[in-house]
Image (cartoon, rainbow, N blue to C red):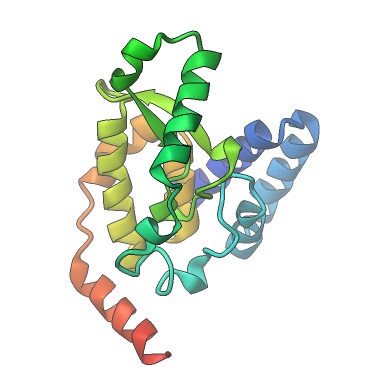
Length: 192
């Protein structure tokens, strides 16, 4: 199955989960799969509650690929900790066990995820095959690939918000160089 097809299915599935309207979203997913249009896929993905509407394929040079972007838009520490404590309580996890869990963003800010959307926040254990440490490593690699032009933002978002554990090996082994990212950011800087 090619990467674009995986991206379309992944985004369609996550839309179904994020919107909570399974029948309607399933129909949208079928239309997306039938259409096979990357532009349609990207526009629907941008409408997802998990994503930051300011970030799209055309804006990556000024947003996620710009040094310091994530720090500039991230939740303040106090707010992030309040969300984490609320999620721990909702799941019945003792506060003393809190350090074993990370406040996860289903779509990380560095891949265009919304820093403030409740739907984008979750808990993940730090350790393990499906833990935050591995997800962060994959996130960094996907960002390199997006900023380097090897994959589209939509594909990266579909991978990270989908079954990222299954996709981990394939994407962490991709060669995504910084030289392409440097050229992309230089082009972006020239436009300002």
